[in-house]
Length: 340
Image 1 (tube, rainbow, N blue to C red):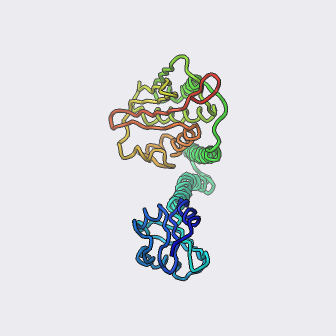
Image 2 (image 1 turned 90 degrees about the horizontal axis):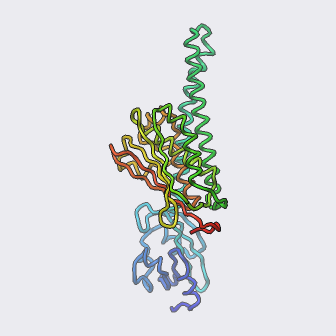
Image 3 (image 1 turned 180 degrees about the vertical axis):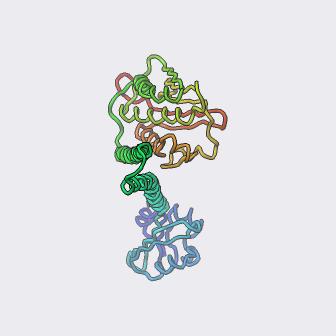
């Protein structure tokens, strides 16, 4: 039975796999359906085209239905099948891929679990020492002072985690809103270096700043770019300085149609298998060292989202024994403020 041309055009225009089924045969299949189920499926028995019991049950019932299934195209690939009668014994069958939604849900669940774990650890320590102070009134003054210092340290750690979570939430909420202000990246780098000098002195690190002359402006959020730099510089000092007299180098120079910002250390470096996961929330190359250094595991996730909001790119170059270089590329503007 030939299908009307307008109906074929409509089905072929759909992005998801879609078919017109009549008399248990595939009358029309769009490009996405043939890529998923195979070429030459038009005119074939639908039971030979979709070899999935639950999907066939919905199609052969011939009534409107929506059902979540998995296993078409790949063993665990999730879909929602939508069946709609069109009259004359014909059915419109659509398969909507739920992989992205399932991945997002899995990320949400993992994030909640990780955040709960990160907050529970210092909270457990605080409760333990606080209960000891409350129940034992005869502690030596130095022990009392040490317990109080631990409670204060762990409470500050919790506060840093909460502040980073709130910051990440704000940045994600604005990710589709491009920054409007014109800012001088070189000036922000100098400001960030000045703010990091105290940490550098504490760790015995030296900061070197190399900023090219006559740099074009970038369209950006100065506060967020400063936050990006604070995180990158602090990471370089904390994890890239294995001993005294180490150097952290900051650089800004033109590259192509934009600016290249680099933060480089000469520390221990990072093994290749860790590089793709550095911007995951709460991911740590060395968990014990990160916590001892005051890290929350959210700094590079914040950096990633700031770069994305600024329509830039983020790259890591590192190898064991060769230090680490972080490269941030941002689009520049001409003097009129137009993105170049």
